[in-house]
Image (cartoon, rainbow, N blue to C red; front, top):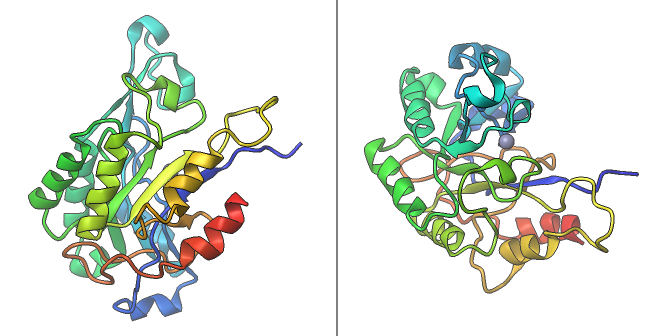
Length: 261
Ligand SMILES: [Zn+2]
């Protein structure tokens, strides 16, 4: 049986007219984590080599969650993935500073190939929007958007210490309202269903996902799906070249609606 769970990430398709060089590449990447769950990863210069002449422009973000190495759980074994231990995950805001400094270490030419995103916030916290604002003012001209952050994610959500994220959380509204206000595209991961569904007639979170992305009362035009073969999906954000947000509002109606049925 086909697995009835898929990750829905979201990003605005922005006007990337300021990046004519992308024409010679095969695609732009709207979903790339430079770090893993213990905040380690590929050197940015090595990643540029991997992008080569195939990927023109890429988002750049860490992972907002850190896997705790709990000695009581795994002893001297240091887990680097959330399935390797029962210890919890916690929000790790420093990932944004790491991404900013990594980006700033590049030449202007190489910087032009990346769209750094703010992701080190807790989407259940009413103060999350204040973190985003603080990162923007601390690193002016660096960040293009927010994400990828998770709402419902298979085995990850239940491992996060504290309140469980939901699409109906007022804190998420505040985050998305702030992102819309300042022109930050948002990428979020939200499983439409639970792992191994058996009894429910339709995907558990589908209705809430539809309401978040498609409701006319929610003015979240900076949201739309990625991971669906979209190209040229990045650019813009405050102080960044390539776009101003809130563009191509028909994107979600033609693609996301077909996904959600
Ligand atoms: Zn991801």
